[in-house]
Length: 269
Ligand code: MF3
Ligand code: CO
Ligand code: CO
Image 1: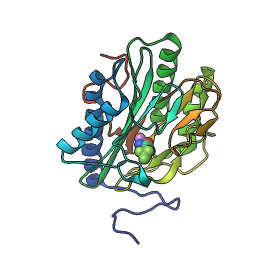
Image 2 (image 1 turned 90 degrees about the horizontal axis):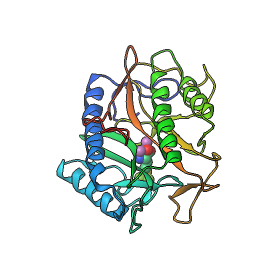
Image 3 (image 1 turned 90 degrees about the vertical axis):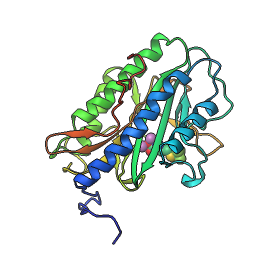
């Protein structure tokens, strides 16, 4: 037994009610608003530590809590993953240079509910290959989201993402996945960004989880650096990621982390 309400499916996935949707909406909207406000802070000459400090300050000003500070020894309010860093990049004194692409990933806790989202940014001028990678990764997330409705399976989501990405001759990272969340950061199921239609747990109304595909221009293999966090592409190819937290509704899904400013993709507005 645990203290949370809502039943668990046979796959151990919690089914939430309308209070859960309301809580996730508030948490998701704070995380998304923080990412909106980071756009002007990304420029050549800026450090990733300065961006992280601004995020930590915004979380505090909102009266919320960072889910990542203290998580398994992690010390920062965000992960900032530049160029060939796939995910879990640690903010630091690294100075951004013209043409760098970066993912900023923020998770906040509001009244006990977790909002987890990430998106891509560009320092200075976006290169042609990087632009293609970012567009395909963004659109792959939405292919996955379009597969979310009761009766479909998690394999349907993974298949939608994988077939789209590979159709553009890019690769889906296998070593990291999305996850259930709610009043905990990481819960069942593992949300794979590849798979076969009709496989995996069946989606039900009230399930909350992230979809967060990482896409590489080269090979899918990754390795984790000696800092035990930073994951990079083994072949040094560029990598991109977008992440939304969503809840399954009767007819599809609610995206909790939609950008209030309509700024999710870096080349919009
Ligand atoms: N936000 C990441 C995710 O999407 C997890 C980051 S954990 C950290 O699941 F400790 F690295 F911050
Ligand atoms: Co996540
Ligand atoms: Co995240």
